[in-house]
Length: 96
Image (cartoon, rainbow, N blue to C red; front, top):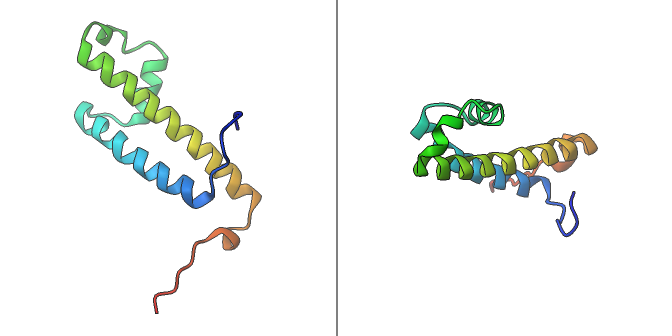
C-alpha cells in the first residue's frame, strides 16, 4: 500500500474491480483479445508496430493503465481474503 492510499474494504475492491472489468471489456471487444494477453504482448514489445497510430497508441495507454489498476485491486483483494475467514467478510443481506 502506497503512502496516502487508504486500504479499501473487500466489498469496495470487488465493486471497483467490476467497474474496471467493464472498461476492459470495451477494449477486449474492440481489439479481439483478452486484457491479460494484450498486457503480456505489450510488455514484451510485441505491439511496438502500433505505436505509429495515434488511436491505438492512446487506446493501448488507457488499456494498460486500467489493467494495471485492476491487477493492483486483484492483489489487494487476494491479500485481504487470506487475512480473513470468508464467512466473516461475506456481505449477507437477508431478503425479508
